[in-house]
Every structure is written in C-alpha cells, then in structure tokens.
Image 1 (cartoon, rainbow, N blue to C red):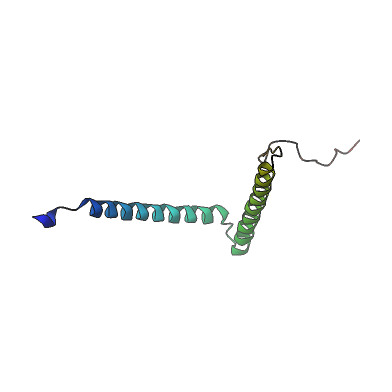
Image 2: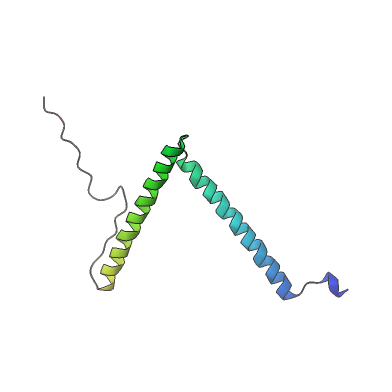
Length: 96
C-alpha cells in the first residue's frame, strides 16, 4: 500500500521536473520564433539580419550600463526609446 502514495518530497521533485520541461519547451519555441522572424529565405541575408539585431542589442546594453553608472554617482539620467525624442535629420526638400 505504501507504493501507491508519493511523499511530499517526491511530488515536489516531480512538479519541478514538469516545470523545467515546460520551460525548456517554451525556450525552444521562442528560439524557433526568433529564427523565423529573421528568416529572409537566404541564409546569408538571415545571418546579416540576426547580426544587426545582436549589435543593436549590445548597443542598448552599453547605453544602459552607462546610464546605471551615471545614476550611481547621482547624475540625472533619462532613457528615451527608439521612435521617441528628437526626429532624425532628413535631407531638405529640393527647391523649385
């Protein structure tokens, strides 16, 4: 009769394993989605698109690191996301 029942520790271990498996599967699905997002049909173009995204991510992390360092010394800091703030300069319209 003792074989039919699990101890609390066994139940927790089983739940942790199931949670870990679900997390692993979610991670795998996220990786597939990211690769599909960058898939340009051409492996070279896909790699360039992924490299560009990685470089942009690294730039954002560097900027965040600088902002944290400034905040640590009490300097005022503002983070402005892309698409907000000052518009980029564009070429002046041609005069007629």
